[in-house]
Length: 134
Image 1 (tube, one colour):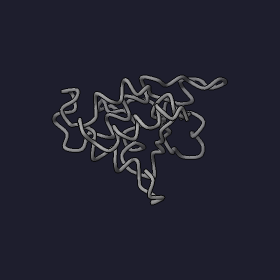
Image 2: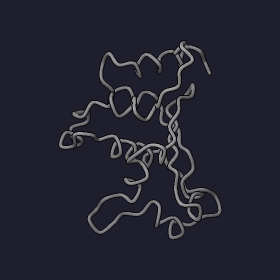
Image 3: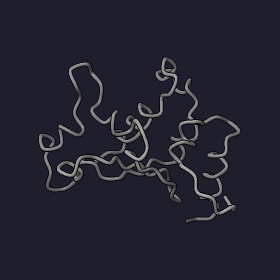
């Protein structure tokens, strides 16, 4: 964290999300897009002035039962993630016409930490951010 070199937080998340926690992700070799989708939707609040129907293209469920957000969370830079004092911020990059339907959400670290490998760099970074208060 002190080298000044840039890195991709999304890549770090992909490396350190433990595939067996919770068990519903165990069948996926790289479960990150599903983990981010679930965390995002758990904390999502429809923005003022918009209706569920207006945001269905971004947030709805396809016939196969998959969330339409999976592709948005499937790769970087289509997902913006960063750390704040109070949690992991997730923001999907959506087509311009529906971007307003996808505001950033903050997921408390208490929900993120159980999903990570025990001795990973991300865990250390989160602890540092929490301690610094920024």
